[in-house]
Length: 176
Image (cartoon, rainbow, N blue to C red; front, side, top):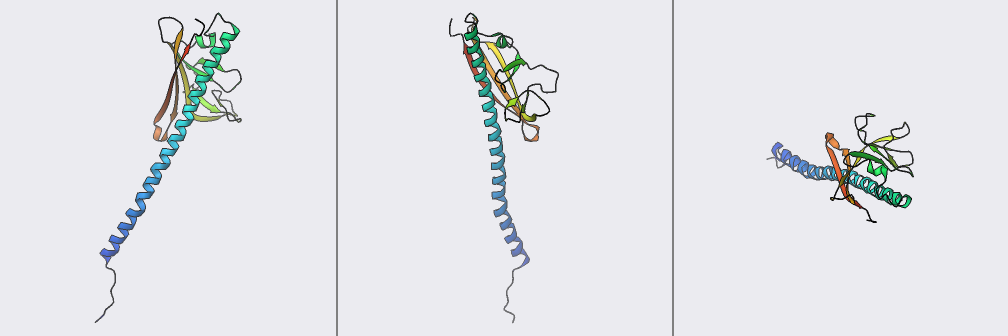
């Protein structure tokens, strides 16, 4: 009699299946974790871009009041009432303009300068990013002493899905 024992084909297939399940589970979890981390990174950048724009709006309001105490809402902000604008915060003197331009399919697109600043200027030296930023002003009260500010940063996510981060704020007439 032959006393040698060997694995049968069925036992071998069952062992390979168990091994594949044990390996595939952690790989799937790692893949989903990486996607979540990348989305969180983009969401943090978008949140910082929105906060940056809101702080610049408040700074423009404050500097406008210091220049002319009779006008609390400077003309640069006044032109964005009830319309969609874009705000370029890359320079020392931020610019605000209409977001309804014909320069591209997305006139609010942000570009990264070689110095690492975000701008709407699509110059050759600047790198196109996935982020776009718009701003809207609406009157928040019956008088002209308060305006709501809505900063919207949106970006192209994986698979063509558009994600967005929206920041709401208010600016007031502190001298009324």
